[in-house]
Length: 225
Image 1: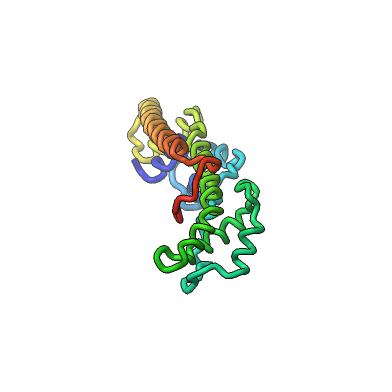
Image 2 (image 1 turned 90 degrees about the vertical axis):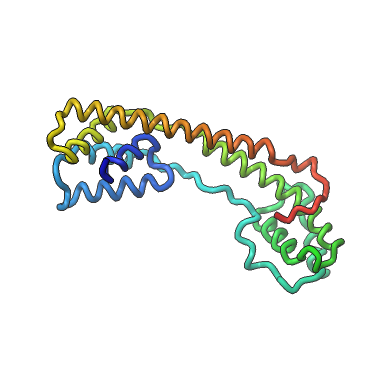
């Protein structure tokens, strides 16, 4: 199986999510250029059909624990009066704490290193951070389960035709009917593999969701992660 055939099989069984759209554009651009060899019309048609599909505006969950290291004051050993005043102004409901404030809260906790800073100050920050973290841990787990649960594309006749054409370009001695049988078998095998991988991701995401703490049921345990 050459590179083009492999990409076509991958795209047919996963769609254009993730890096798929870029791969589809790259192959389509090359098959539309002067370096294209052999029959390419069905491959281009299949790729164009994929690229016409709406983009999935789904990315990683914006968890406030990420991207805060540059705010951490490594020399801090205790909360300043301004820190305490800021903590006092934060909403008591973790759902009402903005992501930006949550990042600042996480940075403040990171500045109060365990064993080097006031333990009472750390616990004061943890009382605010732990429910916020739990809320976002659960939100991230729900988001990841939603991503994992997205349906895979069905096996289309356009995909079979495109892979058949690519196989014929690989081996001109192939009969078109035999190439079509090979193409369908390759796509069906790839679809089974992708379905198995999707099931594995769903199980993993569900396990993470099951383990996600309830922000309303937390005490102020020392959880700085």
